[in-house]
Structure formats: C-alpha cells, structure tokens
Image 1 (cartoon, rainbow, N blue to C red):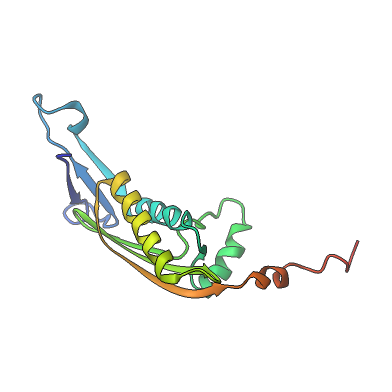
Image 2: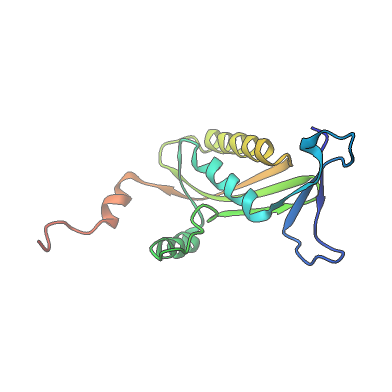
Length: 160
C-alpha cells in the first residue's frame, strides 16, 4: 500500500481528532489511490473496542464508574457509546496508540487474555485503517465472578 497517513489537524482546519490517508494524485496514479480518506479517532476507538470484546475471557470494557454510567446510557434510546466505553485512542499522522480498561472473567490467565487482546486490536486496526498501532496498553480494572450476575438480577419470586 503506498498511501500516506497525515494529520488533518492544524492549518485552516481545527479538527485534530481526524487522520487522513492520502494517495498519489494525477492521471498516472491508480484509481484507488487518488484523493484522501479521513479516519476519525472515534472510528479507531470503535474498531479497537469491538476487537477487544471478541477475545475470550473479556467480560466487559470500562472502569467501574464508566461501566455504571454506560449501563444507564445504554438504556437511553440513541445514546450509543457502549462500543467505545473503556477505550481511548491517540491517532497521529501514521500511527495510533490504544488504551483499554477491561474486566476479565474469573479463572482466565490475565497474561494470555491481554496478549490476545493486543493481537486482535492491532490486527483489526491496522487491517481496517492502514495505521500502524505502536502500542496497546491494557488496565485490568476488575475480575468478574460468576455469582455477581445472580446478585445483580432481581429476585423473581417477589412480585408476580
């Protein structure tokens, strides 16, 4: 791929959370490389969030308060944001860095899960955006215990 990634920020455009993939221009350039493609930080965050959730052993993303607010926000129609909860990205000219807050399932190897998340996130972001992922930092904020789901659900026998 001969495309270059450049920041759209600065100059006459104040938007600093978008990157552009610029191709060669002119009649001699292949059609698929003429023009530029911009990729917002939010797009990279969604890709990273989806890729992290695909890894076995990940229960959810987001630190305690972010998960609580996210659970409320998910119930509001049109609020969205659940995919990027617990995901922060920095997108530069040619590179991206990803920070993830995760909750793992009890009993899994955190080291193995973290390695799987890094591999999956790097692969997905690089394949879909063309950006080089320089690092994926993972903060394990909690371990989900099997009995926590049962405690969170209301007692069925109370009202019928």
